[in-house]
Length: 528
Image 1 (spheres, rainbow, N blue to C red):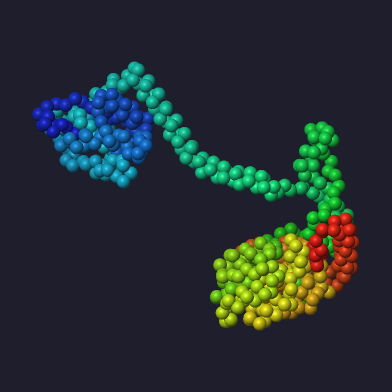
Image 2 (cartoon, helix red, strand yellow):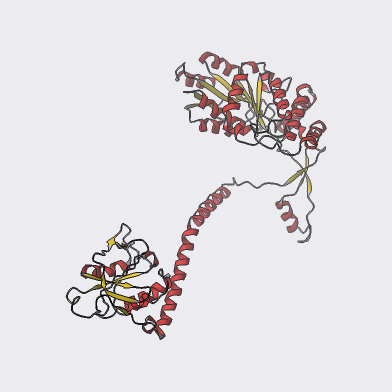
């Protein structure tokens, strides 16, 4: 497509006098492409400016804008636009001009961004200049002067240098813009991490290797240990530091079931038969005989109609509580002040109103219950064993208040399942009140020694959660081997009392010793 270059003639001399040829137009017209590169445009611009020619290119993106957001080129062209009364069209493709080809109303319009555009169609680029081509007879064409002659020698070299500088500036500016957000993000996150370290709350993980059959012994492979060995001269820098043996005191595998031969064998057999993964969500081929068996065992342990497995106890609490709120319009939660983060998040994600009552404070709980309409759905959320303080909730009394005010009860037994109760059902089972609880949540990763979480309750409640909880529907199923191992552990502890009894004996021995050496050591009802 031809590039039309319009040259504005001065008002008085337009019809009678021959104006100087425009060096800018001449330089631009000799370029073979209809869309000159920024470098070529810059060269033409330099020539025009040296000749005292203000101009404006339609494609203003070729030029760097000033700090106030307005194109410096547009400002220079304003005078030319205001003084122009006649426009002569140049055919930039072959470098000639036709005096009879007149563009009567090519007006430069200011845009919202402060640049200028023309009334020409798409693909046409207009350059505005107060110079005119020499007079010519109507219908005739005259060649424009050679632009190379206008930009020879030193000027040509200067233009090339200017071109390189502009390209570098454009690249640097683009790179800075793309890197700025990332740099800001990195800086903010680094400052937060530094603050965490200064407060002494930054976590450093130890890389350990548990020893099957020697619970709670393990090997320490952490980089900290290796670094200490290097500093102490235990090994040369090129040698691997042999891990030392440690005793793991901070362990959630309370009964050592993660290494029990029955549990390990069940997992190995399932892998041999079904492979490593489930192959999908529970809705899409991810429900196996192992999952069904596990949920049946869990329902039996708690004396409930049904149970439902999740990928963790955290997910079980979060998904169940948020889903219940979506199914029970107007529901109000009543949450113990020391509840676990998963319970707090589940309530928060539900966006339902809540009342937080003081830890294990029955009077405050009742005070909160009185504030809510008796007809409104209510759910009291609490734990049986609170892991941070080791105390136990007044489960019976909370159930009494729930009955009095028509509330459902949701108890988190994650630190109690497997450890308490005749079948390992938790503290509520031990105290004979598990039948009064609406929903019981637990974990398979602590006393049961495997992985996963679950909730147990009535058939209707569990089916509703199964059918509507995003945290259950839209995630991959537990691996069959994990489900098989967990089912074996639950089944074993449902009948065996040996592990629970031994655990209580050893805890009493330890607590007695601690109190003897540290009288200020706090006594707790539980052994957590």
